[in-house]
Length: 455
View 1 (cartoon, rainbow, N blue to C red):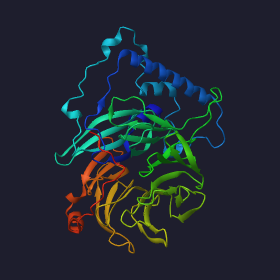
View 2 (view 1 turned 120 degrees about the vertical axis):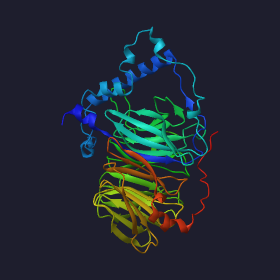
View 3 (view 1 turned 90 degrees about the horizontal axis):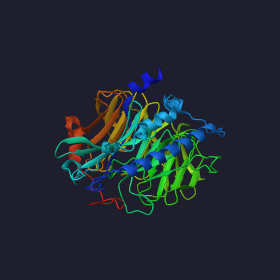
View 4 (view 1 turned 45 degrees about the vertical axis):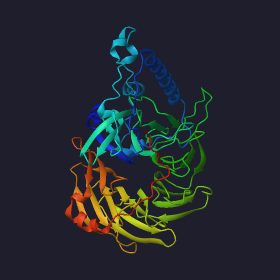
């Protein structure tokens, strides 16, 4: 298939995450760039592109070869990469504008428009969207009361997004509304979601080595597949990569404080324990799940899976247990004290979404590239979950799934059908789901201490 045709045919959602109500600023900042500011950004971007080109000319160290072909994306960064990056950043044509082009840029302030405001009843949904040669972080607004769903604003990314992680931390700044993006690049970008028209991240984690610039390498050497923010130690972010390592980043200094090299293959999923802040769950393509103590990561527990670890999640209501979704389509349940409790063949293909409700006892939802989303009743840990309902969203392969933190039955789903690749759905609209879980009542959650409210 030709490169151009491949680019034109791509339109899908690889990752999605909800943001809890009250985190977003009710009046997001809308940037209005002056001509001089725009010119400076263009010049800075040109310099970065030149440095990137110089780095590409340097021989790669052992172990740095990209494994992008395993994601069927091997052509994305090979053909005229610098020009593609310039076009993606929107500077290709701008760089050619003459000094009389100031009229092309509006400096009017329309930030008070009603649509720009975010209500207390609004939920934000962070959506990684790939369309042609453009990679976007789209910020959706979902309001259950008004039955509304729309893109509030979007952010142009420099590389194909693979995972997203909401967080509130930026060094030497008040708590805010940020999103860390792991991508085909080894560098993690952290964006301020409360700024509209933003064109560069608030900060980045990682840096390629450059002998010409006398810069040492920092962080990963290949694509970042998984991210997990520690909500107790807010300056800590865990990242897993194709390079088979986990980095525990100290975002205060923007360097890894700890590097874990226990996996023998790509690290695809990470999740901090909801109660024990030092405990990290990780899963890899070496068909294993491991639990680490961040203080002494050399010693850890390991469990073998029946396939590559695609998704992991702690059971929020049973703190010693976790679930693993694998490339074989299985969902397995483990007790850290006893080992595997059960395994069920949930899907015919790999599990791409795995969420357990924090509020409704036993509500388990999975998704897969077999094009289905399934709702399960995990009534007791000792027995396999019972399938309650199976739904096809007509979205092609399902690549991601997340459950709303404020609305315990509302999910967001991302797929690869060009005409229908993102959906929000209340599973209680299905009668059998409503009858199964409706009578149980909801667990009243204590508000997360890490979440901030911006006004």
